[in-house]
Length: 156
Image (cartoon, rainbow, N blue to C red; front, side, top):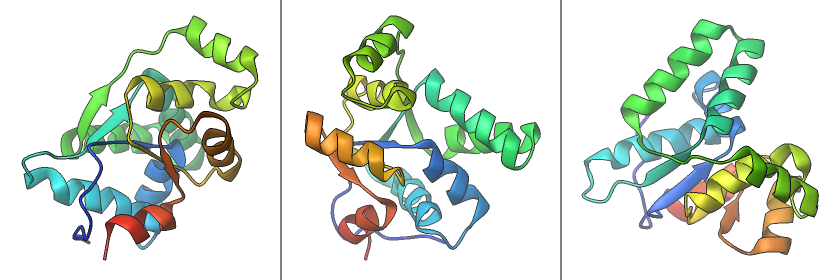
């Protein structure tokens, strides 16, 4: 399914693990529509950069293996790298620990948050409402959306 953009897509976006997994498992989901929107953007002069880190890759592999199998999850990553304009960000373990210790972001989401922050994401998309609420209330560094909110803003 190809989704056309109604509003100019952001220059960079961070998609949480759940967007990739659910988008691949349910082709009728909002998550799948987001991925299609970003893939269909590949012919534009300024395709949206999708921010990745080892933390995100590890999460996709771990969750994908649990829900399907290791071949499925590694195949998903291969397709994402081929179809999206990926910017890989190196996030240091000590930086993750410092953010976790500060208590602003839930400990389990510190690496994800730093990936978006250090990758200079313009928006952050996740089904994790607790994380979104923490990001918006505490940091105000980027726009945060649930999948349906992102589609309401950027797709017809």
